[in-house]
Structure formats: structure tokens, C-alpha cells
Length: 300
Image (cartoon, rainbow, N blue to C red; front, side, top):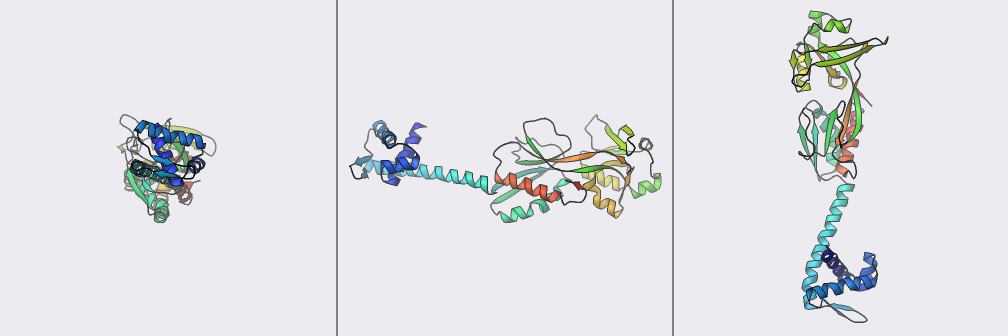
């Protein structure tokens, strides 16, 4: 490392034409600069500079050596410039993880950002199963609900209400339930892990609370598939208000027990690092937050 520092000092001396000029540029004393150059010459056993009271001149060996030092200095400057560009302007590859149902929001949320920064590339990994951010080299992941404790950084983007839903055909066959207990005998659709049941805690406007534990008749690891099966009349499902907004408006789905509240589902932007976020991550989070605030069914 000391040799690299001395090579940088030597390159600066030649660039500025004097020991004092290099010292001012590097924030060092002139004597310290001179000492670094003498150490290079001593270690190499050659003279690099002819010195006089008025000027410095490269020896033949110094010319050859300077070419390598100057290339190293230029590479270091370029590396610093690229690091600053990454910090100040989106560039490189943005590796983003999202669930299947949420992936439809990526294009409208990030389209303007991608158009404005041609040096930025997007790699979207779509999976309802949580992806290990480190192993998959994820820059930004969109996650839902309660997050597990970790060293990752998380910013809340928005939230959505949780609705109990069924298809219009299901309602025609079974009627509209008036109390949560009436749903215990019906088939449920659920996003659950193996060996786990479903749990729902409801509260009405009078403050009455009811907890439901059910074993879903149809389980899936994909929320979008559950919504499609719910629209097909295969059972009752707990779905996000934003996901079902259009289906409720069109009548494909009916909200059950609207007087009962199932709480909200937070939407998070999760990153593997807390500090020094590159511009591509900072601006992607800001773009997602700004877009999701305008999406029907989302809560700011």
C-alpha cells in the first residue's frame, strides 16, 4: 500500500511540474512529497527525476516508470468518478424482487425513471417465496406484512386493507354471511405454509372481536392464483384491497362482512444495507412510494 501511495505522489509531481505543486494538490507538505519520491528512488535503485533549483526533469527510467504510475492514477480517478456517479445518478443493474401479484406495478412505477436514465438496467425477480437478498444480490425487495427481525433496512411504502371476499356466484349460492362464525363451515382459500392453518382476527364497529382459525380447503403459495380461484367461486379468501379493487368494482368479487375490520397489510421496501444507498435504489424507492400513493385501494 505504501508503494501505491508513493506512485500516486510521483505521478502528481510530474503532473504539476514541481514538488510544491504536488504538495498543494495532495494536501501534503513539500518535504513529505520529496521524501516519498526519494523513497521510491532508494527502493528501486534508480534516479527518477533530475532536480535543479528551477525545474524537474524525468530521467529515462523515470519516463517509463511514470507511464505506469500515471495509468494507475487515471484508473483510480476513474474508479472514484464511477463511484460518485453511482451515488448521484442511477446506473448499472437494479436487481429488484417482488411478488407475482405486485409485479404489475413495477412498469408504471419505474417506467419514467428507466426512461430518464439510459445507463440503468432492471432485473426483476418475481417470486411469492421470500428471496435471500444477499445470495441473490438483490438491491431492493418489496415485502408485505410483518417483517422478521434482521439487519436489513426497511421503509414502509404504503398499506392496504384486508378484505374477506367471495365471488358473486358464491354469494348467490350461499348468501351473505351476517357474522364471522357463519364462515366457519365454508371452504377457504389460503396462502399458508405446510402444516399451518389460517388465522383471522376481526373486529366490528361496536368493538366486538372474533378470532377465526380455519384449515383452508385450497392452499397456494401464490396470492394471485388464490384471487383467481376466489373469482371462480371456489371459496372465501382474505385479499388485499388494492389487489381486488378492480374485481370489486366490476362485480367479479363481493366483499363479505364489510362491517368487520381485518386490519391492514403494510407494504415495505427492503434493502440489504442501511447506509450509503446508491442512487438507483434511493430513486426506485421514491418512485414506488410516489406511484403507490395513487393506486386505488392503497393507503398512504
